[in-house]
Length: 91
Image (cartoon, rainbow, N blue to C red):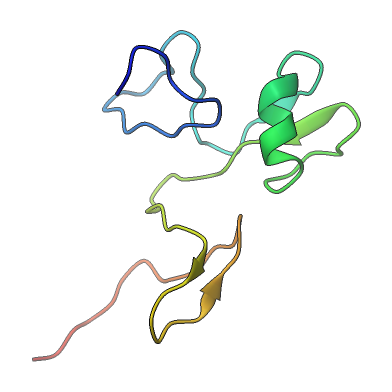
């Protein structure tokens, strides 16, 4: 990581509170007027009314997957959720 993080950067963190200047990806709703640059990137993809409030992604118990279509896979859109908590694999 460089000295200055990118706006909307997601960083793994092994703690239960946000580091100063960061926010947890726990679905919280933030004020647009206090976080205008972040809102300009996220919009209402993760919630909020788009007038005064917007949401952060909810990533508790989830993994991050990039948008787009992988070879032979379905397209994933920004903010889309998928998968299941448990999966049994057979060999």
